[in-house]
Image 1 (cartoon, protein in one colour):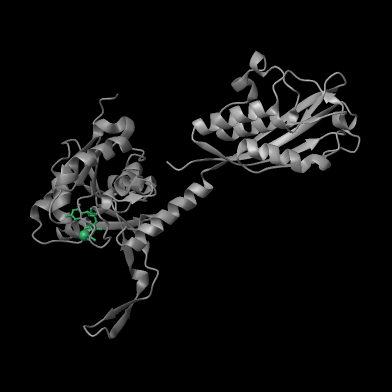
Image 2: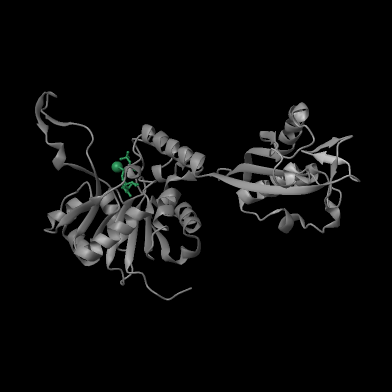
Length: 393
Ligand code: CTP
Ligand code: MG
């Protein structure tokens, strides 16, 4: 806990009804890939570098629900967030949010909850802009389409020079005292806070916005946001891992390799069954999930694993990953050694390990042309890679 009082305040307006979205609940409370639109917006707000007082403006009958969402999103910063009831227009909702700011706040950002995927870096850039210029700062992006002015009959009057145009987003940032004064003076309804601020005689500058900051307005926008989130989890959510294991040949042991018993083949020594394939896979999976390695998780001296076969390690590793919210994507292993000849039992081994892990396992084998310890026939090496991903939460 610290006693510093934030000088930045963020008002997140979420009190609209979402008429154009047409969902069965107000827009900020609609589900967006497993979390509400409001929670996703607040995750960005709490990702800001600077500490901020956060005021959520919610529909009067959803203040309690908004509080639950806000405290969940805020985590350790929960003491800096509050919820107030909104008004009949966006402008009234912002005014009610402004009234809830602490006295120490000097820079105010106003953000539409409906811009659920705005990156936290945009918030930071707006704060910096206001601090440096003491004017209004709004994020904007170039207009992509050709823009035409039309008359009442939809006849084109002119083509507007789009190089002069920007699509303006939120968060919009302002010096607090000037914004308070502008709100106190406002006699008209404006479509954004920057227009109200400029009408009061202040300067507003545009900084780079972000394509992800689009406002969720229609069902089409909601699907676009859902698509972006699944693309993000499909890439950034995948983690890779690597594992290697080596065992020396031992004529007194029977051979266990890739979960199979190999009668008549030269065995490998080891505390467990000496199967380098299972051990390399275990290490690769634990490494992908960031959960340590076979020694730290299972303990090489643990009597439960003395003589244990690969399936014991692999089943235990899979449960451990799943308990942490991971699913196995795939596993690839290469065996390096002179014997056994692996290819006749490749399919059998792949089917067994694929079944144990619930994900595709592919195995290849190679020799090293007589070079190194594997080439001299001293032992067998296995190198495994694995991918895991966190299940969507
Ligand atoms: N907003 C608000 N209070 C209002 C109206 C709007 O806090 N009385 C908020 C919305 O919740 C939204 C943001 O202002 O986060 C931008 O408004 P908009 O996208 O128009 O949302 P809605 O008004 O909810 O949607 P619609 O106009 O389709 O009804
Ligand atoms: Mg509206």
